Amino acid sequence: MLPDYENKRTTTIMEKILPYIELIILLIIIQSVVTLFTTKPAEEDAIRFRLLAHSNAPADQQVKMDIQSEIEPLIEEAIATAESTEELGDNLAALETTIVDIANSLAGGMPISLERQEALFPPKRSGFVITPQATYDAYVLTIGSGRGDNWWCSLFPNICFPDEAEEEEEKVTFFLWEWIKGIFS
Image (cartoon, rainbow, N blue to C red; front, side):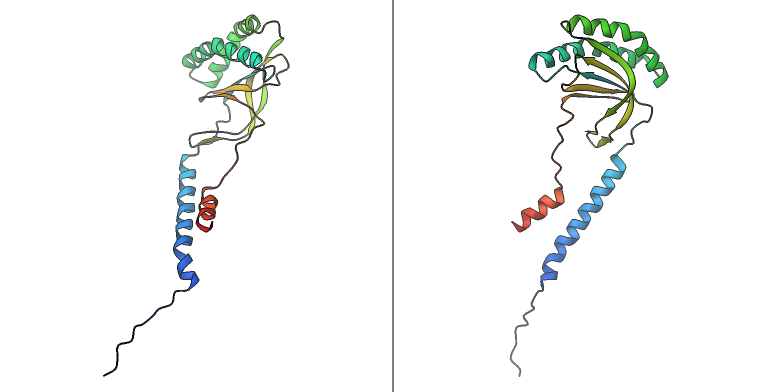
């Protein structure tokens, strides 16, 4: 009778790494599918409203916030009564003098300008919706030199973004890369 021998199986490095590679591929596929189905293209005919502060000084930012809080109800009313972008444009054109008067009363003597123009907007993310950087039809209300942080809204569809500096960009991190670095560190 032959003695029982224990069969020792040696595992290769590839057999150890293969489950991790499969998991990474699966996560990439899931992330791609989620991105495809949740990212909505920006509407080409969106009208936006942008309010530029004179500077980033606290007093100038407060002036911007005061003006924004006074004109926001007017803009919301114009949005609520509009059923198309053309109608919204007409409603906002009718409000131009009122908006300028409100801004002049709160600006403390700084020059105010309100123009409807093609303006460059930075990319923004709201949940899973990504709005690309592009030039959009916009009302731009500038207080003084307009070099401070800004507040802006996409009026049709209605999405508003609070004070953020355009120059500041979020540090981009990739979940998979951070996860892989965590495994091997």
